[in-house]
Image (cartoon, one colour):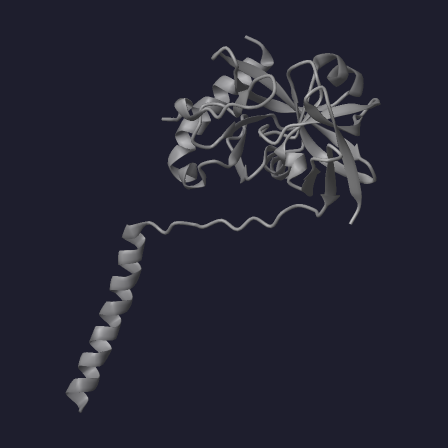
Length: 88
Length: 160
């Protein structure tokens, strides 16, 4: 398991634990610090990470879009919305 | 407000950018993609050259339907005279792509006759979010207030 895979699996576990607290912000992004469990919500990935780095400068964050299993979808020439990947 | 012009080329709108990393900078063209949710998507060779800050990971749904884990970095970007710090970078694909995290800071106007896109820097948008108050808490608040008002009214009536 690579470092990124570990961040994702730990982050996903923490994400499910905090789901009830953050589900109001569906569509925004959450950055979860995987060692402490602290989480930061913002409309963009950059903002969520900025908030997180202010508190945990060396932290590692799992980032996802609230209400979806993935950050988003990426394909050549555009992005497909990942509606079918709703959680939980 | 500073303006930058982007051009239509190979069926994509491209703008000159400088990606700013810890070790090096990269000058070149980036595709403007209003459907991309992130800040900047970069190919692995450019990400290695820049020396970006690794901050975490996430997952992306790719065109074939599979979910892949991607590393997330932060770095700076310069578009014309505008410099932005702490923009999120996702290492994916083989071209540099600018997403909505960066483009949200610009007013965009496309001139179809000249086939150019004018980007006017306006700064980060002010986000107004509607927060839904759960019905239960509304009832609790209302009932508490109503109860005390009712008691007050009853006391006043009795006194009269």
